[in-house]
Length: 378
Picture (cartoon, rainbow, N blue to C red):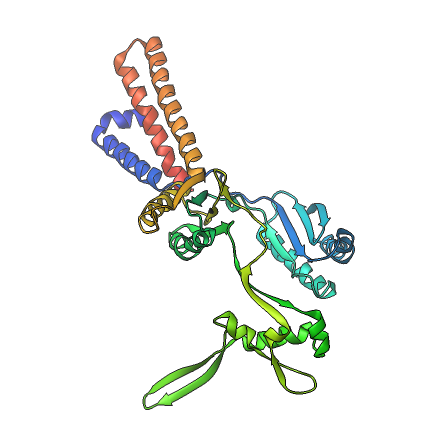
């Protein structure tokens, strides 16, 4: 009753308070983050180790079991599952709900660091990851239209990827499909044996020849210059003419014992659009950024890029989480408006008083707008 009496005696003050609440509500609503999932941390982590060329039995005995035993001593672990396949070991740890995953991930890394010296030397270093809903891609774009798939990937890597990474809120841009350049050196084993050489010797020689190395500083008057030795290969002929020292003395060019080819790596992933080869761009956003706003910025930037690349190259949004988010929000908005109208009609049906119904009808949207302030500041 005190609040009602105050509102009646101080109508101007009440109007000002309501106006302030409405302004704060609209400002808070405009700054609220929009995403597909709320921010929460799944209590699940994983340790992934690659051991190329090893069978599933070797992976299990040499990697999975030792790492799994080391991780079994962690606190708050609810369940441990492992999967050993050819060349890969995956260990999944499920923690109890409420576990701080930042601390748990650090504990996993410490255990892995202790066991890592006992793993096979030719196995890759174990990779520790934690599952996060933000790891899901925000958008996936198909790039198509050119018969030259190499040119298509070059445009994706040199133009599109760098431009999209500049956008605020974009965490990474993954590129799949296409061909990746590779210089293949096919060594003749008979000639290698004839000259008394070995593969490690050739690999070491090529590594030593293909480097850029700092050469110190040179002072000239008041200026200081940095010296850099540029020794990286620039074309195939330089690789073919690389001198290989022989055990008995002297050198021979690499082309005498090996064939050097400018080719492409073996295809492991294929991207197609409408049955034709293409390039897939997978975009992930940074945690805490508005998914809808980031998606709009990406679409705007892609529209600008489309005017700068060749006309025959096009793109298509294959996956866009922002469409589903906007569709869901629009449904909530429409249902809220429909529900408010029906509520006002029912109230008028019972009260049979237009003034009282109008007062209650106005209080419904004001109450909803006021909640945006609490949501924003919490």
